[in-house]
Image (cartoon, rainbow, N blue to C red; front, side, top):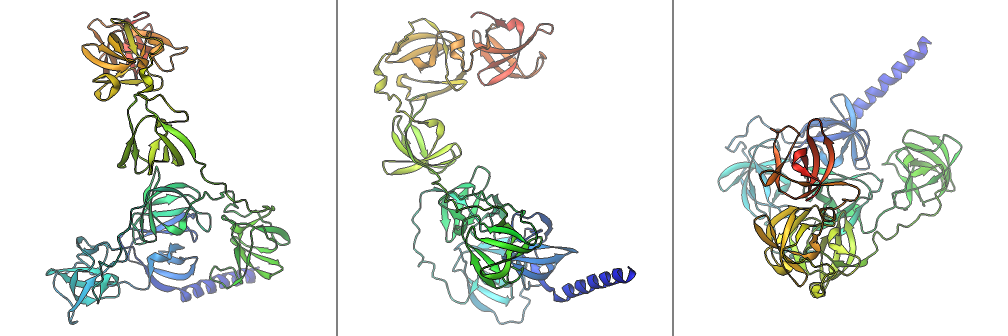
Length: 567
């Protein structure tokens, strides 16, 4: 037994010594100086082991699927290969403004893979302060050219720039054709391993990570910079490479990260996230030679099942495949994803009859393409959350779902027909809302201009006059206008969702009633509302003489003495 333990300890020691001997010294560097994640596996779907400071030295072991296996401060893990370099220029504690090299100064020009200005820093590293930028084509004097950073002079000021952004010939900044702006469209995130895709803050791997988007997630693409696309969702905005976007929604029903395949002698089937064939390799390494490619659904036999790779056999002979591409049940033929969205016809609608903005993107922060009149017919060709992607008359843009109707609404011309109920002059009415809890009033008939005021549904008013489906009304001391359809003869009929609710009316001694944050009479006021306003009573405490009410969008407390069962 002692001999066995000694043998095992000797084996572990020899393996450790071999790994140390085979490891190379490399460096982890990010252009913006941010820390870099070390993950437990070669992909974004794996957990973060630790974070490595930019410029740190690591022990490099091997590369797998574009990810480098490294050791850092006693921990082992995987780092995106774009952050791992062979060497970095030695950074000094403080940068000096004087040239520190005996090299003969040379002329060079600023270049950039994306046409954007180059960052200038006070020292040879991203940890130093940024002292300015230099446009592409800017002539500079190079005093010391390093493998990663170079000391240069720009307009007489000494600074540092990444060496790869220097060119001995002046770049032609006029030859690039001007890109024609493309309309935004809907796409879906895809990846070869079914894992999430990182979204960067700029069009390149040198930019920081803005976030991650899961496989199959819908995004809006509203810009392009070379092979990078600007995308946005409700939670993240940034850039992603074109190869990670698909016009059709992918099939997300694929094998999970944990294989269900049993050990030796078990039958298994090949699967993939996109239905494409999967490589079988000569050994259990991503860098190993490809033996063959097996189509989706191919039956194989599992000879050995490791934690990550399985050795399989078939008509091709034998080889190794990742466990994530195997399933123990026959998947059948690959089902092509149905079209992501079936277009349909809709009509522009608004509760006040006003035109609706067609926007450049799925959000109110985007610019306006045009204003569409109520009743305009549109084709809905996509969606992004509560926003619909529509086209009409050669225009393309986004409209909120609430401003679209499946049936054509009545236009102002259609509203010349008198409504079934027309209140007489001097009649007491209540401001009514079918969906919202707030009613906005207008400064003139026809609703062409809002007066900037809003009242809770249930607010009392008096009719001054009516004309062509509209009414001039007085609310308190103000005169305004509303369509007759926004008026009700009773308080209960005016309030949305008033069915089976306890309706009371405000009755204050001073003309208005304050609704407070708590039942304490000294608590903050949430608003002052007109006497006679219809409210919903949600709770009452007769011992402490308070009631919890809802008035419009406000919920708060009033004295029971400020309520009446009749207006």
